[in-house]
Length: 89
Image (cartoon, rainbow, N blue to C red):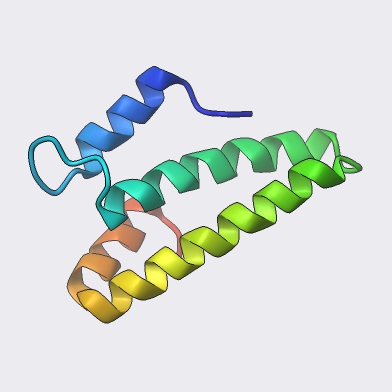
C-alpha cells in the first residue's frame, strides 16, 4: 500500500523547488497523491477495510489542506502543481 523508496525519491526529484528540497508543499502533495492512488487501488478490492479507509480519508484531507495553503500562498504554483499531478478536470 505504501510507495517504494525509489518512487518517493523520484517524486522528490521531480517536484523539488530547489536542490535538496524534501519538505516543500509541492513535494508533500506529490507524495501524498502517490500514496492516495495506491490506497485507492487497495480499496477497490478490499472495500470492507475500514481502517485503511480512515487512513485514506485522512490523507485526502491533509492533501486538501496543503493545496488550499499553496493556493493562498502562490496561486501560480498551485495551478502548475494541480496541472502536473492531474488532480482537477
